[in-house]
Amino acid sequence: MGAPQREKQVRRVSVAEGTELVVRSTRGALSITIEGDGEFELVHSAVSGRRDELMERPRDLRIERALAAMRAEPTRRFSMLELARLAGASRSNFVRLFTRAVGATPSAWLTTHRLELARRLLTETDQGLAEIASRTAYASEFGLSRAFKRRFGVAPSVFRRATRTASTALRCAA
Image (cartoon, rainbow, N blue to C red; front, side, top):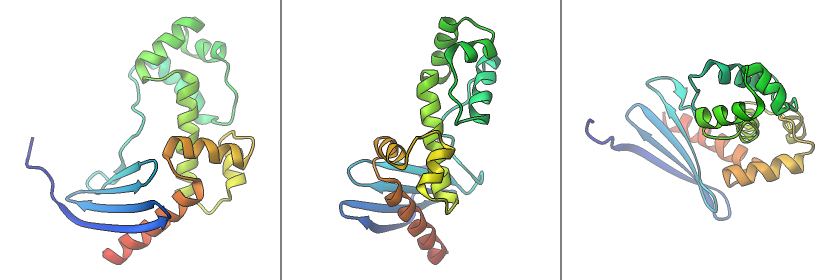
């Protein structure tokens, strides 16, 4: 292990009452934290040029086939039997293998994947919440908003505003 990285720059921006966006720049990495009732952190590495993966990829090819299908069609309702067939396993064995490889049940993983997709769409597009909800298999904006807040601790609108504020702050700091 090397010496601990020292923060080069810290910027704090209030995005809502009781919620603050904190942007920390360290050597080779950028950390964006939304602090408030819930806490969400996004780490971007300038060295690798990509966001750190929030969900690790398993090494079991049987599980990879099921994951690939869920990634390809995040709005589809998959049955455990269908996913198990893709993995070439029985239903109960598939759930056990999947949970051991990924650390979550298939339905919990799919929910997390959908919310990560919603987070990415909020950050990278100007699509409305209704369209993002339909692209992530939520029946309504309300359903997506509730699930998003439960997962990330902030409403989608606060998250979008915070990431745009962070982007502006980073351009000004550069």
